[in-house]
Amino acid sequence: MSRSSEICAKPVTSPAKSRRRRTILKAGGTLFLSVFSPLPSHAAQIMAVRVWPAEEYTRVTLENDTHLKTSHFIIKDPERLVVDIEGLELNPTLKQLVAKIQSNDPYIKQVRVGQNRPNVVRLVFDLKEEVNPQVFTLAPVGEYKHRLIFDLYPVNPVDPIAALINKGEWNREPPAEVLPPLAEAKPEFNPLPQTAPGDVALPKPEPKAELDKPSALTRMITIALDPGHGGEDPGALGRAGSREKDVVLAIAKRLKAKIEGQPNMRVMLTRDGDFFVPLHVRVQKARKVQADLFVSIHADAWVEPTARGSSVFVLSEKGASSTAARWLANKENAADLIGGVNIKTQDRQLARVLLDLSTTAQINDSLKIGKAVLQEISGINRLHKPAVEQAGFAVLKAPDIPSILIETAFISNPEEEAKLTDDAYQDQMANAVLKGIQKYFARNPPLAKSRMM
Image (tube, rainbow, N blue to C red):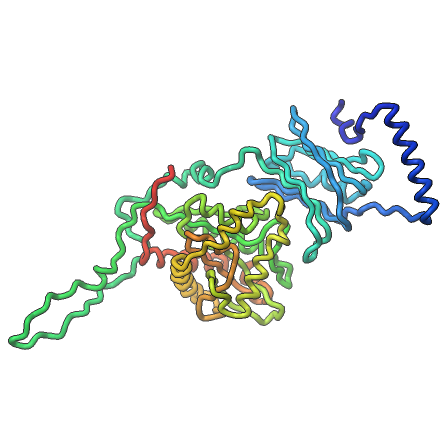
């Protein structure tokens, strides 16, 4: 069979089966017409096609006006994914999919689109390597209609630690006896009152600074940076058209570069491009690299454009610290619905463990880091609230990693939207977050961990 004929190929049936099927269809059609008046047929309409290539997986989205039924199979040598979509007629929007496949897509070489038979459109994805495809539908949510999703995951996915090793980051060790950066402890003596003649002189206590002085670092500090949203999920939108997913990725990349410039730190991004990562997967990535800190970066929004200021949030086990914090957590936790998660393939038990095993110690450490970062941010932007806030953010629920969520500014405020898209402000925000992180680890050196590599 030629490659072009794959689009229009039909299942082979015997003559006897074909005659029997025609007889049944004819009888059924006569009965149907005798009971109901004819109705005009309505094929589903493809309204938009989108492609989100990434190193982790490539997503193809068909947005349409109704639920679509599909079937798919893999053909080997060469690798191809064939998808049949029922109740669909080929239209110009769907044909645009061909031009949307980029030459640097990690997994798709090209796609062919054609009318396989009446009311059935066939897509043939020519693949660059073997994939595990996930094909699923999403109900309407937010601004989206029905969506048909193709997620193409590599059979051999890239491990986060392997990625750090390939970049030369994992095995890099700090110079011997490097103290935590920005150690600002000054000697604070608390001498006893002068003794009078005949009094017994008590031993002079050691300076407080010596007691509290952090020990030298003997290992790298690993930071997991999490730019919020991505791909199908744009996050909050500014009045000038800015998208939260874009500005937070830009800030995260600036912060990543600054962290990489430190002699005793390495960093991992949960996403380094415009693609969606489910909330629990973001947490899993941080745990896989044994992160010492998880920092989720966002841009706030509110219904009124006058709301402004930066905020820092940590997890709460006892409810949100304010109504606004609860509203924001609910909005951020809905990212999976908008971004699109294949519920059937989720490891629900693991996700439940990540969301339920939060600990008091993790929250206490998170509060300390949050306070240090908030103090630094206050030097470059006004604060929305003067203290670290708490709410039930799903992305902060790693049980063993201090985690904070930073709302860098209100993208819904025109003045702050301009800041968020300004290179200078992005750089200032990255510097402030780094200084806050450094101050925390200067006072709270990370414990030794067993070497993984």
